[in-house]
Amino acid sequence: MQHVLELVSALPKGAEGLNVVFSALERWGFARAVYAEFSSAPSPKGNALRGASSDYPLDWIAHYTASDYGRIDPILVASRNAVTPIEWSSLQYGSGPVGPFFEAAHAYGVGKFGLTVPVHGPNGRLAVLSVSSDGDEATWRRLLKRRTADVLLVSCHLLERSWAEERSKAPRLSAREKECLQWSAAGKTVQDTAAILGIRERTVRFHHDNARRKLDATNTRHAAAKAMQSGLIAFD
Image (cartoon, rainbow, N blue to C red):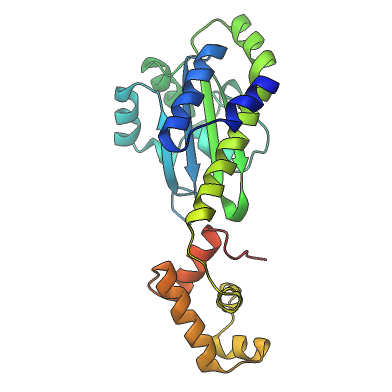
């Protein structure tokens, strides 16, 4: 475990850090890996994709996108509610498009066996780190026994690192701007917020305007959503 802590604590920022992680996963015995982050923004397909990086075959990525697999991907569907690692074999025998999905993934060289670690962060943030292998089942079982805890630790660190980088880049809001947005996020009107905080309505609008400008938002509701997504306010 110590070597994993040393690895994650020394990771470079951005894509370079993910490349270091993928190289380590390969050394540990995993053939393929993908890391993706999703926001809490509502979407017909579930949590909206914020970014992804993988060493999956390019033709599989193209096929996945063209087939709109993000809509039915059983791994992502399971990850939205799971808090423990998900072994792909537990998902492959469902009804509907689940079987064909995994058959296609195998055909494109993603790997016969796989494990996905979902990590849930603040304000609905979700990160998933998936690893896979082309070996036989006995080898895969040994690999899981030896490395599942390491993959879990790496997953948690990657999301926390991303979250910290985002917080450092977030615009600074005053305490009063945060309060006004917080009440707006809770569904309160300008009049309600003014009464709660004991200030004038025009003062509430002033703070809303400042927050919208700082967050580059189109309206107050948008500003509140962006503030929650960046961790500037929390939805209680």
